[in-house]
Image 1: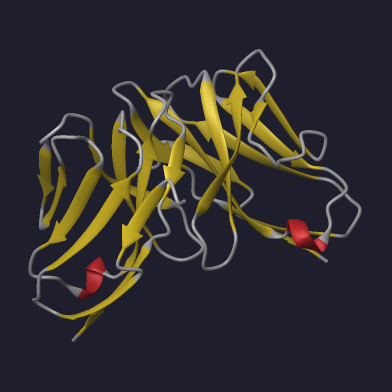
Image 2: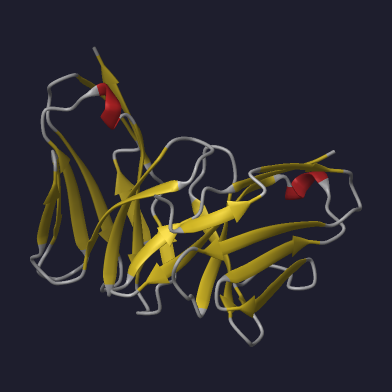
Length: 114
Length: 111
């Protein structure tokens, strides 16, 4: 069964609004989670590292004020896309590491901004 | 240059045939991960390799990591339609579970 769960699977929002995506580790604690973005027919691109209890670390070119990451507990990280625009429409997916360095991914979340 | 290169980009094989997908890193790897993805869905973990020369198998899929820990191959024996999908290799080059992904290989298995 899934060890990392994302919600929602699909979300449509109006341009200019904000939308939150959740990433949960199931039955294990994850001090670090990662957020990726995948555009159609492309590979995954790392956006940021979510650190429990501290600020997220963003990859070069990713706007931290636009993609807000909160990792308030050991089992939950959230990604909020603020003031979303159509170009933010994408597949967002998170990952977390289980002991032994096995990295599992969530089911992903499709964001469509209209 | 691309940090992680995956080849081929796409592959069509007949059911029952064997195939190999390659993944080459420009950096030494702390870990190399293989995943399978159906477009628009999550990644299914296949295997993780860490040691030089390591080889792992699960059902009809075998993955190897070379001695220098810069190249990995994924081999599928006697392919089936259920093997169809996108295969992604992910490289941990910093030791912190942060992965860089290859471009992916789209596999189609024809009856």
